[in-house]
Length: 188
Image (cartoon, rainbow, N blue to C red; front, side, top):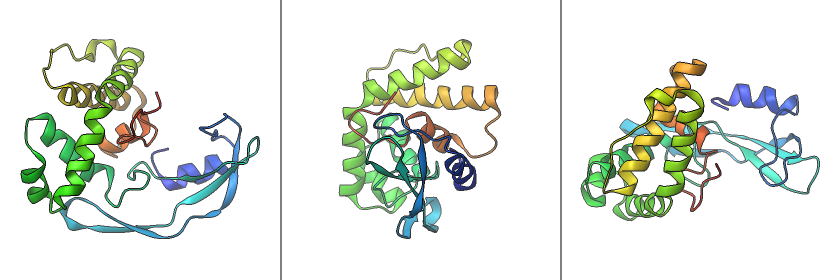
């Protein structure tokens, strides 16, 4: 879901599925309030919905596409770091530019590099399904650069094909990766 309102409506109608077993999710209160940092130093305080699976005992937090699970920064913030790394910049200059701790940015880049092939696969599959003519064809030595290029092409294809509004590239990428942009093996 691209925003909390649409997700809340879909959750109330039991249209969202459990990522563990595929069962319908139902509303189950709200998660704790959390503050996340966006580009430009803006702080966002959010209180996402919680959901419980009707088929298994799992509970889940339903996040807006601007957010990543367990992160104190928005997906746009993390995306800026990934784009910088894809262009060959290191974690220290990126951290200084973004105003984030070096260890945090280093961790993001390490996790994204570990999942670069899976991220590339998600991006290529989405482009092939939505707009095959937009498929990135440049060979890259850097697997992260290759993955970021494929994810951006997929986000642009989603926008062209589905008219995803003006949410921006990184929230679309967060939806494509099911919020697991920095997970070891993103769901695809």
